[in-house]
Length: 155
Image 1 (cartoon, helix red, strand yellow):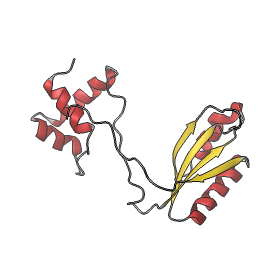
Image 2 (cartoon, helix red, strand yellow):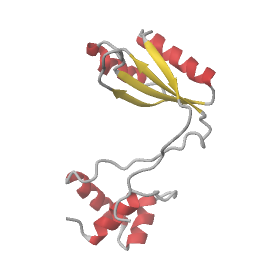
Image 3 (cartoon, rainbow, N blue to C red):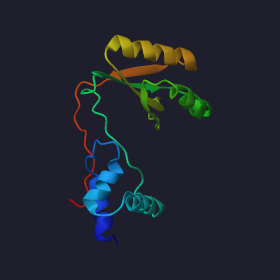
Image 4 (cartoon, helix red, strand yellow):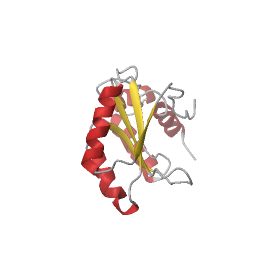
């Protein structure tokens, strides 16, 4: 299903991407092909539905964001898209997901906010609530970071 070059590229992309100005060029040098060939292979893997995305993990605590607030909102179903677009305009929001509701859990929109203090996070949450005109929400602060890793392939 995969040739050796594809396996090597997938392995490199599932690990730590080099922190250099041109990471795909560095990967190409390590694989022994050109940067264009790496990018073409990545595009082909995406087109074939094998590779969904290439992402990065921000270790937010190491970056100085010690407080992480998961804000869960009750949003009318017909306002989800519009509300999410407004919320995503706030630079402090790093994640925004629609989720199903359950008995006793009416929250259908989840957002993650990172900040240097609870006061900072609360201020941002207040601004968002005012902007979207929603007061039905809960704030859940992270107590401990338990996992920060990606699935590795072809190691």
